[in-house]
Length: 486
Image (cartoon, rainbow, N blue to C red; front, side, top):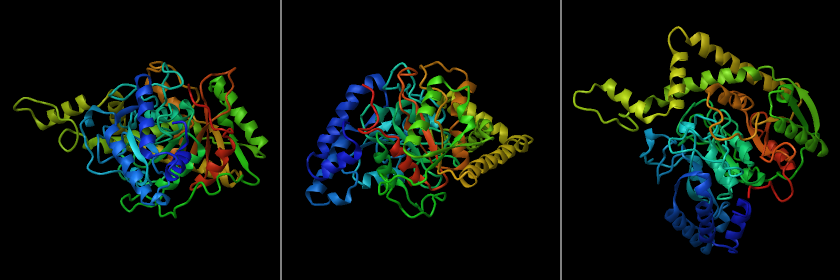
């Protein structure tokens, strides 16, 4: 799409374009890019055109003012339930699952006039950082199809980067929105835990999961977040917060802006392109009047260990329902097979290796004799990580903390075969989820001397500071928007 979501909605409301024309353009863009990118698991061609026609009819009746996303094509990560099509979570276990309801966040976009174009690819059940773990094949980076797009919301990030939609929903458990946003050169916002309803999001780790936005521009991210945020009585973890219009003060700079840069973010383990991008972003913020201060997040190096205990433990519990009896693919067994054999075969056939690995790890750390040594200790580390961030915001006086979203740019497909090196890709993102804080990733100023690929920087703020984060991110956005891949 050559227009932002805000521009599309305005053109459709003013009848300079029709929603059907916009949906047709989006479907044409998908047809052109999908052979190389594979961002989508399902495209709703006929449904999208019918929904677009209904939007045009409403505008003809004078209802355009009630549709802030009039005719805007959007995509949903395929772990977000929709009452039509399939919700597979990128897994053979759910390859034929049809949800009977629509997730609250998705319904909010639909009610605002958005047209759901399709469901995007992901690492199976959100477990991965490359979108290579999908049971239906990997997604490829639109900047270079030989490279990964990041994960687990890689399909949503690639869909936006390939200009098929200006907005896509993803989910972020340990960096699954921000890391693919970094690799694909788009904007990705992970809200404060509880800001957006999780009703209809298939659970991976319930205390960490949060629905968020991938978008082409900061304004589009603010627009989408304004629509999907808010209390939902169907979600017990949804916060009682007044709805905000995050676009209202978007262009207003924050006076006396203070940005903290953790010494851990200047790690020698970073790729040179990431280190250069961090310094370029610091310089850009300084030119806009920000005061840059050094801060310390000493528990950063323990975040990976804590996350890969807490998240698999919760996954072990959440995914127990997918056993071939209550939910999911059922193995075909001969007569006389036991219930245990049915469970074992169904899960063995339906779940991929990374999901099995995390379920086994989670079951182990919760087992008798290991709970206190692993899980209880990880929860103590989680509290310490939260305390580090709180100290930087309160004692350091920081409005936000700046750090990379990933230690490297996008690497080639198949380059990371061992789990440990893959898990270390999340070193800068998992702590934010453990602390329940908001963060936004935006493309850093590009230096062709270091990398032709995009590199993203994330801004982390105190709880409920999304408005401030979006305002700071807007100062980093070049006039005319961030570049798109050819």
